[in-house]
Image: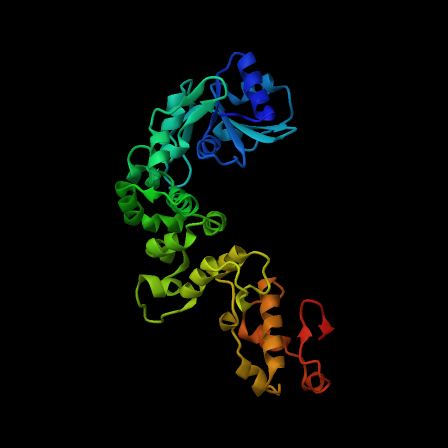
Amino acid sequence: MTAPPYVRAVLDKLEAAGYEAWCVGGCVRDSLLGRAPSDWDVCTCARPEETKAALSMPTAEKGAAYGTVTALTEGGPVEITTYRKEGGYSDHRRPDFVGFSLCLEDDLQRRDFTINAMAAHPSRGLRDPLGGREDLEKKLLRCVGDPRRRFDEDALRILRCLRFRAVLGFEIEETAKKALRDLADLLKTVSRERVLEEMDKLLAGAYAEETLKEYAELFCILFGEKICADVSGVPPEPDRRWAQLLKHVQNPGETLTALRFTNRRRRAVLAHLAGDPVTLSDLQIKGRDLLERGYAPGPRVGEVLHMLLEDVQKGRLPNERSALLGALCSPQAKADGQGLVDPGHGVGV
């Protein structure tokens, strides 16, 4: 594995001070896949205070409680984490305690999937005690150890597994697949922010559509049964928006009204999943509401609705019937040809 000079400098400084250090995790996985890593992580036997002393460069201490120091190099940030063991995950998200270790294998054993549990060094080569490279070649997502334990420890790993499925196109190993479904309710414990962060990456994947279809029932737990109606069954109030979502993912080049006010298609889908309106059908008022208030039939009705949709998507209006109706301007303004005062700009349009 070839590490960029600024990463090699971090390894060299730690080793010159007498500490073992390795590149670890996603940068190793991506390098073996022939992809350019988006970031570089290093693990070491040095404690956080020893790491800072060895580096003699600016650092940030976010994550120091978990043994992580970020080196602020000229080439970019490098996260450096002390080898560690973890124990107890009472909230299904974070370890109850973290214990430092002098053994690289201890650190690899605590990781989520074998393809993320490899370490590499530009001079010493690959350390792969859990068979991650073989799983890469098989295109297989396999948990480190017992899948039920891994997912129960940290429910975010369930969504990470689906994200890797969507991005890499790998199959999920059968016992992990069963554990995903058995423990799917734990997804409710993951914060909305982390859910949408993972979904953003998932939806950018080349295999997003088939992942959404194959594991629809898990997404139902995250986003509600109605949104998944077309894939997971027929609830009392079926909703066709799930099919629209799949269409957005499948046809990124298609010009769709739903994407008019978004720069990237997956941002629209994320808004959709988060419960924000994506299409005119999601607005709490319809064209007939405008007609009942004196708007003449024709293209102007659609223009006004699209302007309201934009204001809701940009946070200038809540998607509430009273607020949307209140944004429609007076009968005199309609008579003057204005038709709507843009609530975001306060200008007659």
